[in-house]
Amino acid sequence: MGRLRRSRAHHARRDVHRASRTRVRTKDLDQIQLIDLDPKNRANLEAQPIDFDTPGLAQHYCVECAKYYETDHALQSHWKSKVHKRRCKQLREPAYTIEEAERAAGLGRETKKV
Image (cartoon, rainbow, N blue to C red; front, top):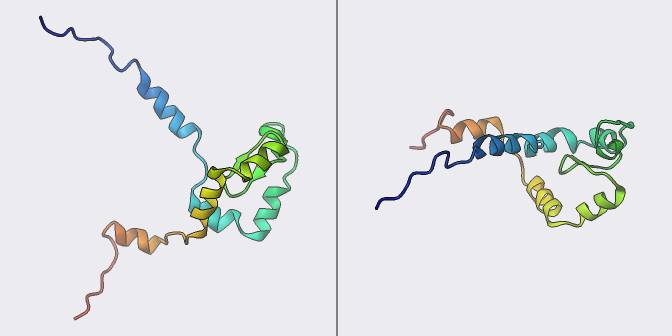
């Protein structure tokens, strides 16, 4: 007796996973390093005007993680978390330049030493 084939074995999970990957996407590390961590831009992000569409009325924002929080207590506990500390450690490393990315893809010029 053979194994019976199940119909619809994946239970339509593909679209749910794809949507969740794109829904929670935040800024990339190089965008944060080059734009948000600039002192002038950082001050503007930390003191945003009240916005009724964002969580916490846009008053509790973590610049390093590019996320809004509902309350000040939630933001304070986020700053103590491993997720925030790991993100800060990643931001301390220098960002890749366009030339490094092209060299990694094999598009850059290699100089051979003779």
